[in-house]
Image 1: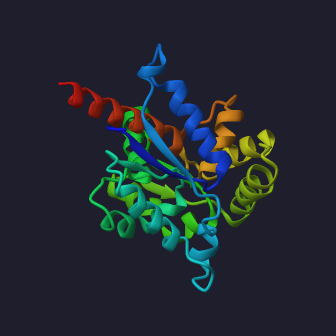
Image 2: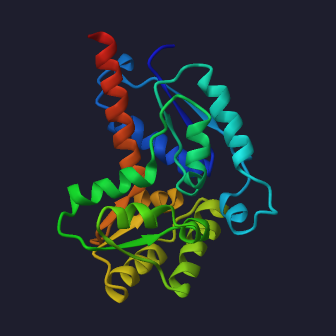
Length: 239
């Protein structure tokens, strides 16, 4: 197979399924051959990213992720996508391990703010403890000229409950809790826009999008960039 991309997924599996669903749904295709060529690596046993970031004595996700990148690189994909925000803590190490470009999920999400919400100034972030702690989004948001708004301890506890207790553990979305978190970020912390910086939150948005809050769904943005890049590569191959 030529002109395909590789998806390093399974972090978690339901979030990866959401990415694949949106990818196929949004691809402009009217027959089988117009869909995109890709390889999905659903590496569900990659150690928890947040656990390691908060405690380096825990098993490292970098080792299996590095193995996946090196193995897939031998197949010569056009690019990689990693539909897990927290895994981008290891982005530089992973990119240095291959000549194949890796789409940078947080960078692409922040770029989308100017397109979708040009007047936004205060950018809220909800994500795992690992992403909040390691500042994956802080640099990108501030580099783009925005003020980043982190959740309070109470909101962070609610967010982790939504991510781990509901989406990861039960494959359920507590819509009321999700909407409550967005309300707190927007109306209590005065965020103009809220970035969904965890793919389990993207699952929540997919299943409970019946709200009026302004959000940037990082996984949704990654889907659009994946399609754009794949179609560009296909066109170049035909030309």
